Length: 617
Image 1 (cartoon, rainbow, N blue to C red):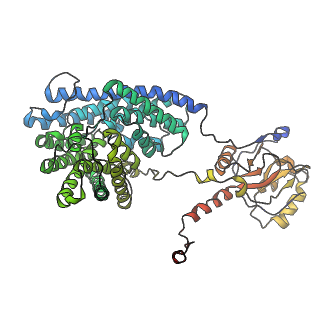
Image 2 (image 1 turned 180 degrees about the horizontal axis):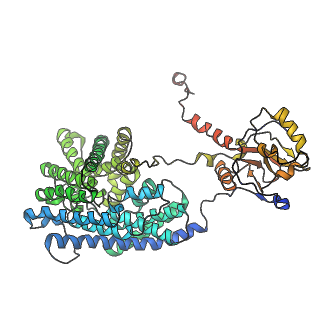
């Protein structure tokens, strides 16, 4: 019997015990080597192209449906021509229009699906995290219709949220109709959402980043490639319908000075504080609605009262208000008029959103943030004229910084503001301002406007996307050595005597079994060896009841851990590829946990390794 020093491990209690497999035990099961892409990714890419075309078409349909409802509600005409509700001639009757629309949405949510409530992205995140990306099929139809009614009757929302949610629902539906994994459904959901956002704003790169930061929670080629391809195709669909002009018109900018750049960073920080306040106010209002003694079906109608009143005094707060963003970014509106518009938009939107109606948050946040940025820029330009602050850049930074602070989608905010205006001069101010907003948001607020709702339901949303640490460590160095082995032909009587003497005080629970040549036959546990139902006269090899599962020295710990789960074992002999049946170590679950020590050590503050005083000499 061959034995070396003890290796610690854990048992595989509770695993089903199969009868002896005899010659079948010669089979060796090795970890599946993870590849960046494979044929399934190509399949997903083909599906994503089809999905992008469909999502692009749905975006155009929803946009026209909103315009149709707007024309019917405010002008009494049956046409899908794009128009703002601000030019209506309804007088005080305008207050009733949003209320009527909210009543319809409340009934749809009550008797159709409650999932149509809200702005769509948190609900999609919840399905990704908890339901294997399975969105009910009816949402694909009910969400856009409810959003069209809500926004078309004056709801102060953007169309992008419902379009993103509908695109995601399309992707999820396609994944449910086909044979796909949960990970592939998530990719299709994200591809549909990215295609929907791109079809709305013509911002493919920002759409991909939004999918990564808010839906995929990862950055892997397997998911990134189909999503990026869907965004590219959706861009082509949008160009076919709406042309290639930027979503928001903005005059060409002049390169800012260094002092101005510093001012935009400070401005972004101030807007970040405002984003935290906006998020807390929205959920505070939602909490107030939760305490009302009436069914939630009626809440949207109550929230719509604020929409109607604000719309009566400030007609431009009604509807999507993309034209408001154009005016703010072009500095065509400012001073008290801008302050009034931003405040009324915030009051109307926050109360309506808190009531649980259907609509998007991006456009309102851009309007509020752009207005706040422009106002701060005006004040700074007046107080410090030598800084050379451009109010238009201040509005652009404020718009993006508000979304960055509220959603903590930093890269999405920067790239989105660039893609929708195509002003490269604004990139550096955007990066500084949005990063400052992101920093303040992280310091002052645990959850975001996208995650607070589902976090309250106990859903844990990833806040950081880091490389898998176990993927960075090979199994060979992490395995315990030397290995305790048992000879396959030894009798249990001798092994049990050894356990009773030398092996009784060890934590060793598993033993690789080798033949006369030193090659692996299988693995047995201490529990197997001490089983009283097996006589002392039986050889050790009779206790080997399952095919051999091993890990290679150059397998990653992630591959080894996944192999343990697939095989239902608690330890793997580690072998070299040159000698795949000769054990050189053994990897246990405890070894996997111990490997994280290096990761934890990397987070500790260390003593300085270079003395600055020596450098000064």
